[in-house]
Image (cartoon, rainbow, N blue to C red; front, side, top):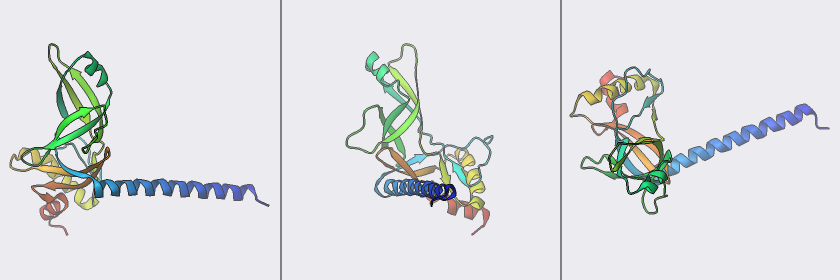
Length: 198
């Protein structure tokens, strides 16, 4: 005879299996983005020093987070009033990502990323101004290296000769952060050199 306790254990087991299956699907999805995605380099801006250190990850704040688009008509303004868009990208002479376009229509033949944000209008202007939030804002790393790395990102904007960027794979609207680079070197190796740790 099956007791209530046995039923509870069975339900608990099914719940654990379901959670593990969801986790496995998420991991597999991230690997697919990393393996098949188009890679873009998003330049990072320094982190607000008042934002507290988080511990095991860096806060990523891409500089390229605004876009100006010519207003075609009142209909265009209404269509793009959504807070979620598909962003496509170009690269500049430094191989850094620049927003190419924002649209509510799914791009057919190029890599795109689902982003959120808001738009604003200026009186007597033919442009719509967009500010977007990226679906990636963290880079996980060894906790011992994360604090000096965060300090490094805070200071990088003070030196115009240095560039910090996140290497991001984009595939079917999703993103996976592959690395964070400072002057072409992975930030973990740069922070190791700065602290003398191994």
